[in-house]
Image (cartoon, rainbow over all chains, first blue to last red; front, top):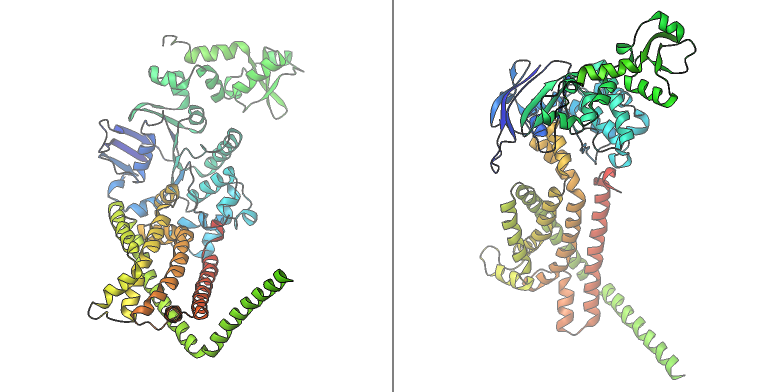
Length: 325
Length: 231
């Protein structure tokens, strides 16, 4: 568990603190996304956790241990760190880049190389083909993958990620996000993830921390934030399409009606959707095929139905109360 | 016939001139060998000393921009002093005197500008995000210096080393005036005796030595620079 308490960073040449009395708890195995406009202090908070920035006041504890009195280098070797610019060492091969932290930790060479093979495979790179290449021979997406593999090399319980997918094009970004969610699903690391992209925050986060001018504005699950935004700043950040975003976060199986009679009637309905798909995809099917009811499938079997009325009601029930801005 | 015959005569003259140089070199090969070895050993001594000294200085000043500016300012001023006056100045200092010590010290000071500057620039040119990721992964300051900054600065540092080698090979000729028995002596004596073949022979051998050293440095550079830094 990571606990930030009263964290403040005051840079000498500025009047306002970059981070102002910031407190937050992150549970083990949780992905917490720091989101906010540029200059809001989110990166500074992240960099205080691995002490690339020293806080002016406040405390940081990891599993109850005070981070600020720990040995800096040891601390960082036990935290994965990924930045947007990646910062691969250009004079080292992909293999040596990924092996960096294990070697710093003094792992046996055999163990290190085995781990490198495993990780390159995990992030979707062919270890034989890519391992011997140098960073300048890789595409942007491949470099990001190597960056993630390098951060995970020594299997750190905590990962700090600063806009890790910010430098690649939208298609690659979305693929990297999906793959990372998969990886996270099986490794369950505690992740602090910084982004300015609210959609990315909603997609990647178990929890979202919305930050403005160095202060925590709201902290909660994406669903909580979308359905009960704390004030105009959050509402503004979420954008005009909060309802649609909600539909993106809700799975069809969570909203569908299990009504045998209705399913009977819907036999042969051309509008179908997988149970694990977001409701947004069901909406898309409705609009495209011009129907009001979508049959929800698990495998080949119809397990429920989703109607236009239900979708409307869902959005209204969660977000319909605050029309005032 | 006139012009054709004149041209032939001219060509023959040139041929004669170069044959003369070859003959001169062959006839004086023992002396020239001594000069060459002296020249070479002076250059190597200075190169070894200046690498040890100026590379360290370049690394040290990369930690502090203020000091860096001051040090590089000094190196620029030193570089502007005409070599003959610097040699002349050193021989008046006890212990240094005529000969190798004064020569080596003066050349060492000339090597300062290209070396210190290039080491500094090379280290400063390392991408800040590469440094940031190194720090973020828990590399110590020394590990960052030896595993990131120095290897990444190599190409720029090497450019400086190659300039330095050529430079000191050339300036070393002037040390003949303070008693160094090197290839500069051929040029010096050629001048006083109006013997152009002697001058050219000296100049030619000095250039060959500079080119050879530069070529060898190029090989070392290729060997030492990571393939990841070659485009």
